Image (cartoon, rainbow, N blue to C red; front, side, top):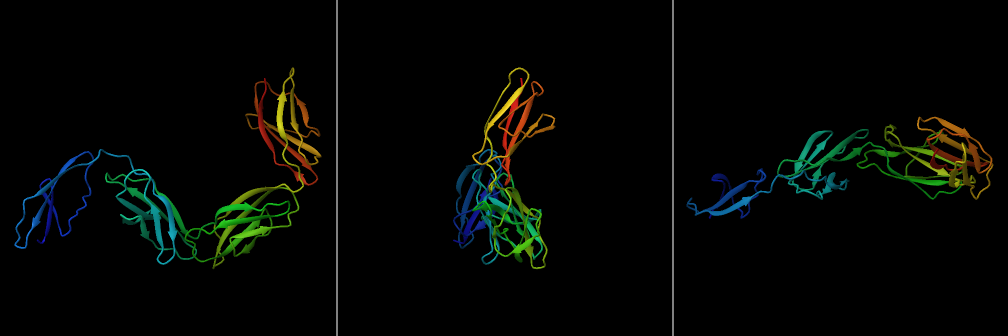
Length: 313
């Protein structure tokens, strides 16, 4: 015996030396007749063994690949899990919107960019009816930090942590900026900001820095430090006797020197009031919905706002 000749619908496909054959490029919802004949050492063929196969009807596209990740241990490799829905027979990997590779396995060797550059890799699953999934992307190289997290917040400090960009190449550190303060650089993926002297909102911006000193696009996060400022007012309610609207709320536990109340009408116009107590009366336009924001203040700064709404009769 020298091999097996495979036929489909009477057409010779291929001679194989194993006892398996994978058939591709079949149309959906169609019946095929496969035949296999053994070829002996003298070149004669046996009678065929036959198998009738009906392919499924046209299917929906496969779902996206899952858990796309980059490994730089050894040769740089992308790996992923197959789609949750739909059977994938092949995966198409593109680099910067051009096909890089086609593979039947859920992994692919890639190349990493030089310092100061970045590549965008995308992976699509393909099924037997030539339908493709939505792409799943990963950026390698010079990119902003990922997933900023604020932890260990006190009245005067907080810790900021972040993830190194996937596929990072040539990174020497990170530039941090707190509000409008002078930027500074760190080599770790976390930093403790201390000595904060005011309550209120803060913004931290982080950029990746590479060997040449070039900086990536920024990633930012906002946070609120209460300090000795009051907590937000609570339990907003309102009544409408006659043609007035009476607004009331509960004071925070902390000392308060005053409030700022902002009403915003449907056209976006703001009306600002500064009552000293937890109640106010105002003549408002009838049958109108207002967004309500109430902020308490003391010498340490403003609270977070109480945000709600009211609708007049």
